Image (cartoon, rainbow, N blue to C red; front, top):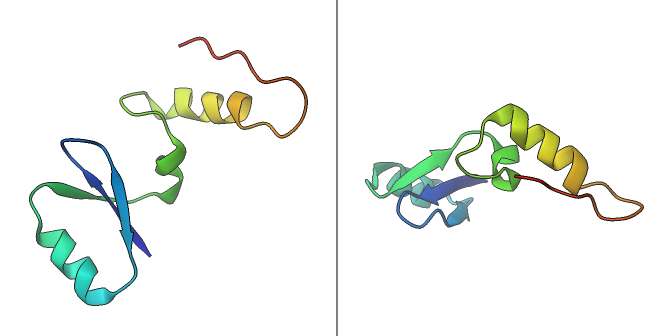
Length: 69
């Protein structure tokens, strides 16, 4: 499965059919998302901050984390 992100809206779409994937790679308005974990990342934020965000916000137990951006 390959995921693409719209350059204008930031929405993502995923395809598994090889013909669809090749077609989307030629589209000017979409970019391929190389790392699947980027889907949960915050846009326009350095990777280190995203990792800290994931660690605090996506924890499984206890009170919700306080996120100060």
